Length: 375
Image 1 (spheres, one colour):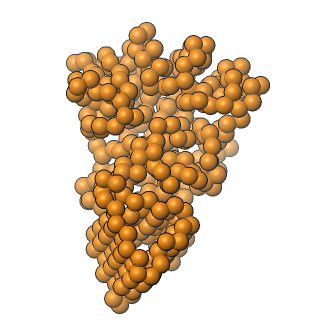
Image 2: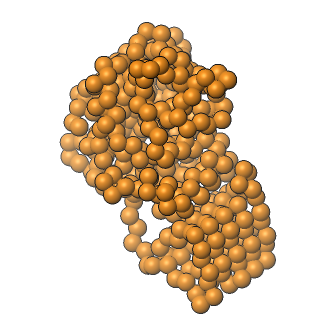
Image 3: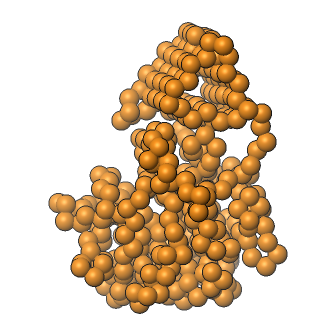
């Protein structure tokens, strides 16, 4: 799809992941034992044949840069295409005539990348949030946009999400969007929620950005989309396979627990549309004589001597003898020492739980321990 440009909004907007985003953006949060959340949208675009992709960043992006690098693992290290990192150079008022200062929202970020959009020769732009976990056939969405003749095509799902950050939509029989509400489903009348994936022509996106900037609009969904709804046709592409928008720690925890289910994994990880990530060469996981592991995902390099149930363990996690982990997520280099007990806990990278400690959260409010903490 040489005529399509991908743009991923890889910075925090309406998210609350507590300690998990103290040092990184939501897009860079580790997921599923080996991935980062941004891997899903990057892979969706690459699987659709989109090899010109821009990553819009704002702050706390060092982890994201370290992970994506030159895009080699996504086949994006190319001479005439590839991935372009778009840091917040537009904080300078001289960087773009549309920017007046620090980013206040998605529209300011897009305005900061207006030069990138104008120089590109693509006919269409796929604009997507970096906090979506889903395996979407983007080429089918673009085709539906071309066939439908709409100005914008939004990817929506019928899955309800009672969240103040969710963008709800109401569709007519032609699958055209007739109402857009942020954080309000209009007493259940708006039965669809947006997944943060939009297809439109490049020139039309440039026009919308300029129009919003001149009217001091900063909120993409609440202002840009509603303005477009009054003047243009917005179509809907309904996607009802597995999907999760990671708004908060509960969403993140539940998404990791979901992939322990075979049916969810089969919808998310497809042979025809694989999810790519940065590759690490690690030794296989080691299981001691007394280790007990049940219904869990265990990454390479782990050393397990204790008991692990219904949990996700990233690379190089140590679980000593008599330690017990249930319904928890242990990120890279985690250390759970002898006699410790964890339930509904999310440990960020490099956390050490000392001997005999007991920690317990709840599925609706998992306890999150910050990076490199010692408890």
